[in-house]
Image (cartoon, rainbow, N blue to C red; front, side):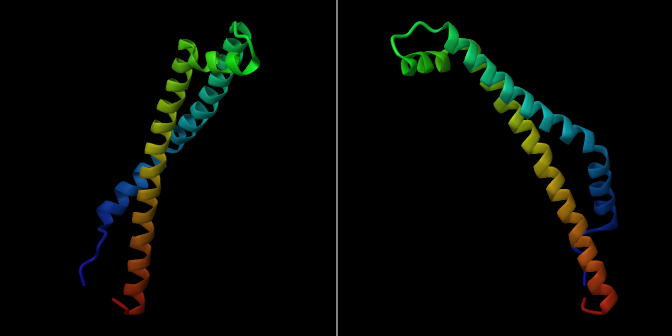
Length: 110
């Protein structure tokens, strides 16, 4: 039977996993930092908003350009983190598939 995953493909998967630990952690911390900064921006905008009620000030603060920019930065960071995380998961699945195929081959199931 032909293997679904070649040794070369597993090597590339392992290399990717080994070289993206820091990148993945960095994007995760960026996600947390940008979320915090967006909330800070909202709080500052709320404090500066001139509305007749707390609810109106809340709505005005969410529409403030600096708040929109902060949330845009956050969602960009989320996208980048999720991209790296998803690829790392896919590469880990490649390694697991190779291990399963190898075990089956050793047991004579393939």
